Length: 206
Image (tube, rainbow, N blue to C red; front, top):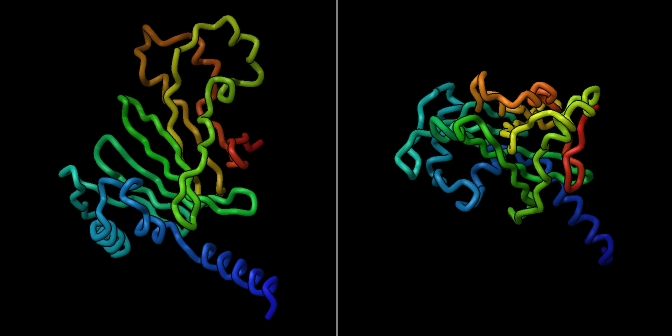
């Protein structure tokens, strides 16, 4: 077999291996820098509990209690504590598959961040910007936004849907304000938008 053929076979094997991996696999393999609260043995216990239909929580390194709340081949969701959660997902991105790690913290309303990694070695990749006011704006009311009172910052919760393979972003900013001090412009924003990972950015699914 010549060199070119060997390279093609190796690439095909690598692709099959990557395709066979599940969210549970990458959760078990994730480096401590990505999942610092959960040691490897703790993660294995959490998977055993979930697969056995038990809601038993496991102790994390901060003394809190963590548990898996959802699991499919493509995505795994963890309740890290009362105020924090994490979702680890295998996401198609062009011809590749990347690992998306979504961390959501109550600040005091839900706010998420997303990091992307290579499936082969957990090398961190550039993360697309989270959607902002321009993306949440109701297309039919964009002109009104120019003169409306808007908040300085949006709080956004992110979730990956393994069935549709889309990211669902929810504007949680209204809950940060009381009725009396809520900026009027928030009513011009859509509550939810669905987006697809496309290279180094999110694009709206229309």
